[in-house]
Length: 386
Image (cartoon, rainbow, N blue to C red; front, side):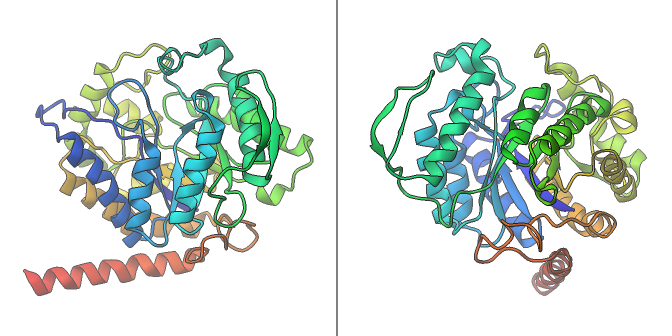
């Protein structure tokens, strides 16, 4: 299995202490987390996009460009690019620029977004969200693969003059994943194009997401795409990962924060049914507990979903040093066991995108060795300086 760190950049007070970092500090934490994730051997780092609510991720391209400047290996993803509300020409330009800056490490994750307030903000009708997504994605694909393009559609001014967006992508069009949370539509669109699917796995029971995944696989086969490239990603709930020596200790430490954030959120249609920490750990996708508990939960979802890429999110209202400690502990105590139990060809032999970045494409054994080497290096540096 491969591992992604996702930050949709919520900017919230810690509901227990009332503390909140400045906007500048929060954004810089995202960049530093990505740099540290690369050191620890994570495979990708994803930045979300929101244009409403308590988030500061309205410009994910800017943040990804900053990450590209301080990293050399880790893949850069979006989570998700809200393509339904954006201009595909600008998306093609902005993300191709990041692809060039990172020397081919970009992979896009697109979707219609799960924040309904974004549509009136951009002067769009929510009722058109799926048609907007389908039309804009078809145009984006052509912009990245064709030059001197002319085009006309329903939702955007026609390209009547031959159009070539610049810069061009680093080495052919980046791979595009499709984010899926509540509807069969995104799963069907991914299957139509033969693209990988990223299931949110956040606020619904796992059986609901399994329906989306099964529909995706059925449609993928029906369209005749190569099954070797049918990759699947999975999220891990809205609460964030939290690891302690025992599951009871993890629930004791993180439970008050999780429950205050969860019960304080009231967005109709987007509320978690896992309102208390015991329910979240027992039945929800939250990765909270001992390393063994977290390993078992990921593998239990893998047994149902068969996913190749596991996404985690840090509990960003906690002190930043504690977040980095969780990031490292997950890398050292969880990732090696899951990699061994759930191998994948994603970004390895058999994946046509494996060698796209100049410095990526390592095997899972390489990644595991790198995590150990990085840990030993940081531990040795600590001993020398303390």
